[in-house]
Every structure is written in C-alpha cells, then in structure tokens.
Amino acid sequence: MMSSEVFVPGWLQQLLVVLLRFALSCAAPVNLTNGAECSARGPGSYILVFTGHWSPQTFPKQYPLFRPPAQWSKLMAVTHNEQYRLWQEGAPASDGMKSFAEQGLTVDLVKDAKEARKRRAVGSMYRTAGIPSGFGHSSTELLLTPRSPLLSLIVKVIPSPDWFVGVDSLNLCEGGQWKQEVTFDLHPFDAGTDSGFTFSSPNFPTTPPENITMITSQKPNHPANSFYYPRLTELPPLATIWVKRQGRTQNRLSNHILPDTTKPHRFSETPLDCEVSMWSSWGLCLRPCSRGGLRHRTRYILLKPANSGTPCPELEEQEECTPHNCLAYQ
Image (cartoon, rainbow, N blue to C red; front, side, top):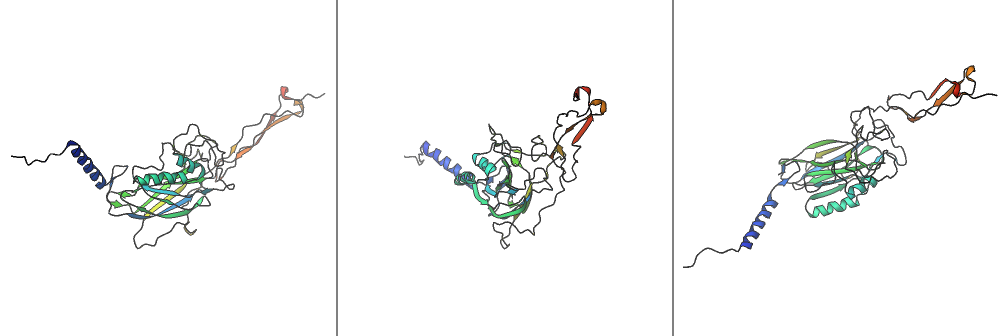
C-alpha cells in the first residue's frame, strides 16, 4: 500500500522559508531609529516653515554686511526611514554634504537620495528658495508616509567656510499617530571639511576631514572664531523650524518666502566686548631724561564693542624715560 505523504525536497523547503520571512518583513510596521513603530493609517501632510534669526543684534561679531551679506541657502529636506542618513553629528560628512556645506550645491545629495529611494529608504525630497538676508522665512509642504516618517533637513550659512544648520532624523510619527506640531531651535554645525575660523575665511581644506560638530559660544575655543562669545553659556538660536500638520480642507502654502508681516522671534541682544591688539614696543625719548622726557606705546582696536559690551581700554600709554632709553644730545 502506497504512503499518502508527499515528499518535498530540502532545497524547496528552504526556499519556502525564505519567501515566508520576506513576506512577513514587508508586512511588518516600519521600525524607527528610537525603536518605536509607525503604524499610522495613511500619510501625514505638513507645512514646514524655516525662520532665520541671524541678525547684528543677536550675532554682532563679524556680522557679514557685504560681499556677500548674511543670508541663507536653499533648504533641502528629505523624508526617510532609519536606513538613510542625510547627515549626523559626530560622523564624517559625505561628499554630497561636503559640497553643500562649502558651496551650497545639492547635486550630489539629490543623487544619493535618489539611490536610497530605489531601496525604499527615502520617501520624498523637498527644496525651498534661499533667503537673501540673515532673518526671514521660507516654507514648503511635506508629505510623510508610515514607511518614511523621519525628517532631515539642512540649510547653509552664507558666507561661511562649511557651516550649516539642520535637523537629523526628526520622528514625526509617535506610535500610531502623526504629531500635530513641532518647533525646533537650530544651532550652527561645522561639517569638518574646512578649517576656516570666520565667515569670510578663504578656502582652507581640513586634512584629514573631521567629524561634524556643533559650534558653540566657546567651541572652537579661539577668539578669531565668528561665533566665539565667551560671556554666553550658549548661543541664541540661529534659526528655527516649525512643522505643523495640515488638514485636508486647510489652505495650503506653496514653496515661497513668507510675507514680511510674519515677524521673527526676538531674542535679547548679545553683548560684544571690545578686543584690542598687543601693545607696540616703547618708543624712544625725544628729550633728555633730566628734562622730564617721556616715551609712548600704542595699540589698536581689533573688534569694536556692541550691545553694551565691555568698552575699549586706553589705546595709548606713556611713562618717564629711563637713562638707557634716552637719546644722546651733542
């Protein structure tokens, strides 16, 4: 009598197991970087508003007034999941990020994001127009999906060696719900690819490149740095982003700079202390010491004070001559 059991080859069993695991992974919720899962039903529609606060009152030191004046590059935003990173503090900048931080170019970043989209790691890309001054607004609409609930964005500080502000992997999905509103203060970052200290520093490549780091009021700890404010515990926000969820019947904003009627937040003025040079060498006496001769030395102002900062000290000093310092008269 023949057995009713069906013989299945071993290779076929292994193939069925692999196919089953693949199907289950596709059906599973998206795992986020913080270990949560986005199980929201349908996409989330948002309006993103970028506001620059870079003004001579909040950042008076070496504030760029011309060639070029203080301004912001175009904003680039990407929606994605944990398998993609536009940039990350403490990690090296990619070639695309280097190109953007130094020159404001997005070609390589867009190319990288398109490749990641083929792997379903990136949802969509968005760009806004630049802002021609240090304070102002730009905006764009965003559409996030449960598969790509993270938001990353960057804006270059112009002029600067390789400085930018941005957001890394902001999660807009909380459990099974889209967040309604998020406000985020932005501080400057150094891409680690150029060693310039000031806004207008010439090109000075960092070799080897360093990791992306946040610029603070005391880091880099060098008086020449444009963001060096040793009296402050932390810098005021250089910019802010505001992300708000939109309803289906809500009026929608297109990619454009918001009207001037929307005023940026006001921050207290940042005091800027006077900085002076080292003293020059003492000059020679022009009269015999016995006749009350005096000698002089001078120094000059490196940085004028602003916003009630410490005023400049005396720039000229004099004292009585000593015998070895006197001119000999015939």
